[in-house]
Length: 293
Image (cartoon, rainbow, N blue to C red):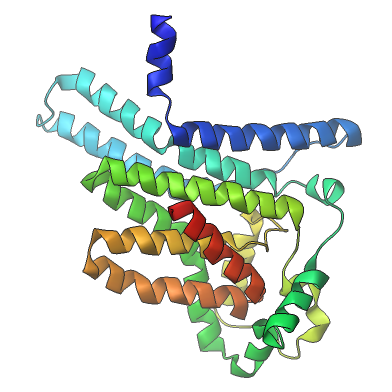
């Protein structure tokens, strides 16, 4: 009984939430795989490196402290520090593992219908026209490249802000991590209920001008390798970057000033680059608000 209580006291809510998401998705896809006789055979998990990078830096820091003789407690303490780092960042990896489940080819079998027509209809009902089509008049190669970089930032900013808070305040780091995992859980429910590929894929004939630039095609092709093909509603791009903005702003006014233009550009890029409808962006803001609260 005492051993169970000791184990239970070490389990965190972010562990339970992240593990539950993975378990539910594995069960969901596993059952459909058995019924469909299809393997989960995706291998493109390079995006994990953006979470492994700060973990590697923290482990390197602990190793250097030991090598330089500044670590209190010797090699045993280094092992404890390394174990703590891996343990603290592990829910991030579970979150990415859950996201990768939506990249499987099985997804086209278990959710064979796209809801892009309905999402476009909502955009037109609420705003007259989906902004992704209206923005065609502003297309320029330089702007496209700039927004392509802004779009890429969704992989960089979360681990950066996480690392900053991890060094400053572990409790806020855990709060930040929990908000991201919770936003992911809500977003995954949206993917299951309203699978959609986004306007660029669903309605190519409605665009009169093509996107292009020196960076656009190589960067987006690189991103699309690990991107879930039906992750339009809600936009976790927007949801997670909103959480990043909130917690980065809590760190200092300087961080807030730096992050505001980057995150706003990230939001704008999701529509300009034809990945999302405006209703997806609004849903992403709502997901972030719920997760933060």
